[in-house]
Length: 321
Image (cartoon, rainbow, N blue to C red):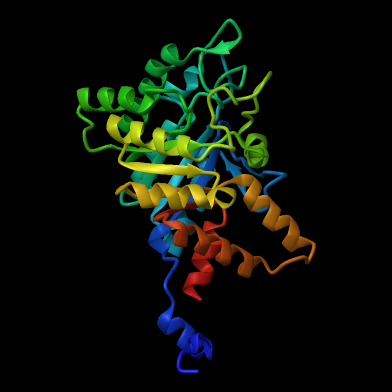
């Protein structure tokens, strides 16, 4: 045989020489939950080694992020009080706004991404204002825009709307530009499926809907072409980065979006994906490091440039090793 592909796999050094896909520290974004209160660092029961931090305890988490060389964090807020319209999301004294300001004082060069949604802040747990028991898309847009502006004023480099309301990217782009924040990026959760893999996150953020579900605004997991429509619309409205969420069960979607559009793609390795690996590893059913690196590499191979993952700290340590 003249052609033997196995020749390129004979040794580790040979495999490293010809490998096609790499994970870099610059790919990683670490999600962090911030909670109102003092002296709080509490583990999320369904997410081993993931914590909720009060702002006075936040710096210890950021110290590790920066020391490991991770360049970006994504903030989710857990307010002390919730109401019908999720006012904590757009309060200048909101918990995420506090975290952003402190982060920029401690580490000015660390990229800060603010999740923009109402679900953690509403008493009913839905991602927008309700009317007749249903989310009113258009009445939600001004509130999301106010939340994005408030986070930009606090110092966020990127705002990331995750609500899945139609037209929210344009509403946010307009209010940012009108107030002098033309350089604040929008990372749109353009392709966010209604997924069973969000369960642990909802425990962490206290954001489960009080009734019903989110299937009327999050995407149907049976649809692929619809994802391309969502991405096209958000790009036309001014999105700078496009996200696909979840990641592992949707690598075909990451690939389709990457092949179709010339814009940076983020893949969100969500809480359920994280917790499944952790549970299996704790039971000795798989090698955690090998499984995580294989999964993250698959996201990169599918076309994602940005990987949002709760494994980020461990991945950074493994890369350095």
